[in-house]
Image (cartoon, rainbow, N blue to C red; front, side, top):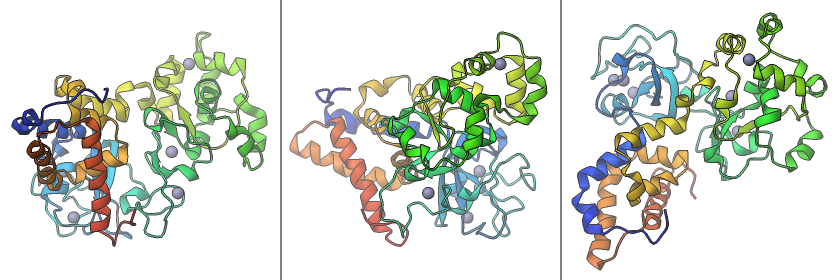
Length: 371
Ligand SMILES: [Zn+2]
Ligand SMILES: [Zn+2]
Ligand SMILES: [Zn+2]
Ligand SMILES: [Zn+2]
Ligand SMILES: [Zn+2]
Ligand SMILES: [Zn+2]
């Protein structure tokens, strides 16, 4: 959207209700009023962990967006952004005292939920909180699409490419657990030039690197022999392009559609719990677009929606979390434009959100570092 495109502020103020709907589109289907439990394991949803109810040392638990508002108001919550295939734990056996106000009849536990150290408020291979009060280095956190942990850009073991929002990342640990991904990486991934030199000196897997594409998941070995000749993975293995097999891998948009989905590969992915990689609608981008589509494609014409599109995931997360507090301030902000008879541009809105995010960090200096 070009900066010349503006909208009359009067329009924006008059459409307050629509404004609200559009901001909630960022939540893309995460319902802020109803507990998501009855939907079962939700394909992807915004999740929170409550350290007041389920502190470190106990069992990890995650709650849905609505429960974070209605059942854990005033509690110490960790924002987990979105995770896949999760069922809301609010008020189940893991919660000693608390009963869910929205959906009280829950199974004792949700045995298919996957948990990580994120549920205790720490992230990355360095297991630090975010934001980290002891860390003054501004560093973007990037989510691995496989384990869904968030990693510091500087702890990925590779050069972080530009336009990181548009690319999916798989961390080094997940790459090594699913070794066939290195074959795809050699042919599909985004590799920044300096990476080779930087990594060659301190690569931790020199032997595997030599063997290259011959190494594959042990569980896949048997079925691989029977693979149809049309298997794309097999073809790529035959080409055998070399790539440094260390560090995280960034994948260009649309990369999932290039993965082989022959029967053998599907079986292999399913055994590794990676079926979601064949599903384009599993991506965070698809999740975000879902909410916007519900808004009937108006986003291209609306400065607020357009500005939201340009925020990174952490900023979007902050908006989701602070949406209710923010709404009043946004109105005040817009009101000032009305008084001056000015129009609002996408840049104005973006500046507003940036100020909001800085302000919140100052307000809560105990948890957030000053910026
Ligand atoms: Zn819930
Ligand atoms: Zn709580
Ligand atoms: Zn609840
Ligand atoms: Zn880290
Ligand atoms: Zn990972
Ligand atoms: Zn295949």
